Image (tube, rainbow, N blue to C red; front, side, top):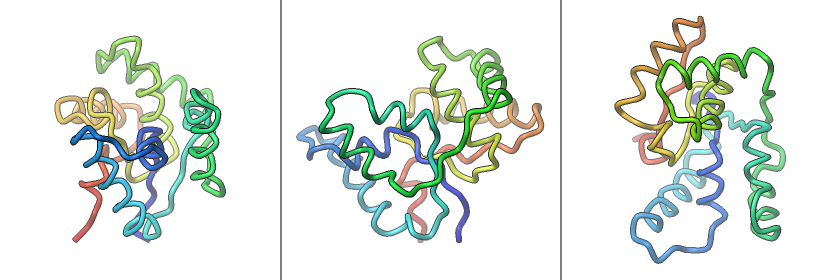
Length: 157
């Protein structure tokens, strides 16, 4: 195995979505499908209770399609320690209140020792300016941060 990958909700949303006409969204969908088909089996894949809650939101038929994708995938718990770490990351990294769930995704993956956090959220997760701060903050709390990345960054050779 090449390590453990935490799938943030955007990955599953792109997998389950109808093909987009928007060029950026269509490219992300294709890259996500490529990663899922070519690389997923090389990793230990996990999600969290937060991902499941986010997948359930919205249209019931679409939610069911998203939830089917995660059947059998390991689900990481949100412990009190994870919540405290998420609050610390959000506060110290200067994330806006609307990014609390993003900080929680990072904290879940870090606390549980996951190697990679796969996401299309470049605003508050896979963000080149934010990444060094998140890494420093995680290490200051005694946890190793996951590599925050997008599917194209985790395609391998």
